Length: 283
Image (cartoon, rainbow, N blue to C red; front, side, top):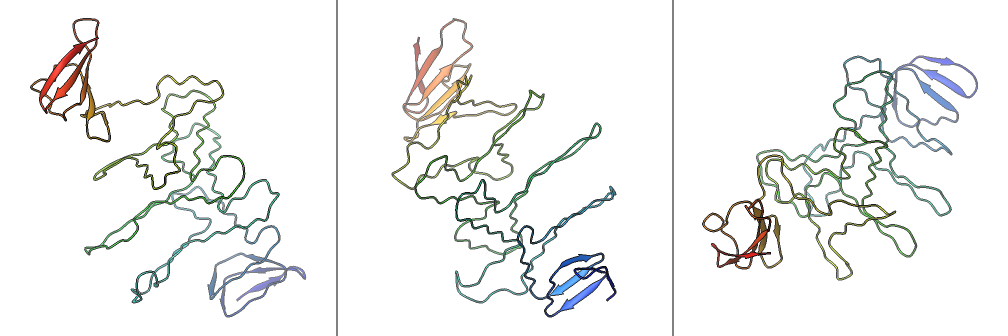
């Protein structure tokens, strides 16, 4: 270990390996690598740990913090007694009268000095991956992320997830509040599971601040098609198309078919009787 004494409170250290305990009362600047075998406890009033990394602009990956937690062996304990693996645990506890509380604050900022090309700009990536030629018996689920909220009395919005798309001017690309991309094997793009009698609605579309919403719910496709556009709780559906459904569409008894593009100016509504017979009504 090589050290250079700078003053009574600050030491500049080169490469160092610490095995055991180390207590530092002042500032501690490390100019090289440090390997710590054991626990490290940092106590500070403002910043417990401040890490600044400046990339050299080379074709490489740069990390402010790189955490790797590896399970050394398969646990032999019973279900819910085997412990947990946590890559990074952040906990913030406040007692009141504070502007904001963030357990994790992850802004991703791109300040362009010139025309720029980029692939992705994410504030965070959450991913779960399961592999191996074995059977997985999972009791809860495989989740990319989990958001939960618990609150007693009070005022204000309570939401497990808050999404705020704030694009300040019109751009050529589409802007989404939430974008769900379904590939390979996926049963539902989104599910609202209701497990309480204290729910007003499974989903709400709300206009505020005198906003005018052109479309409340839009079903569309750039390629491919949607067979049953809406299915009700009884299984009957709402279909649409430009052709006569008789002889071409099989559906549930009582389903409705909205036909557009006919030669007349009226829209024809078909009601399914049985599974293949459709009776037309002109309105």
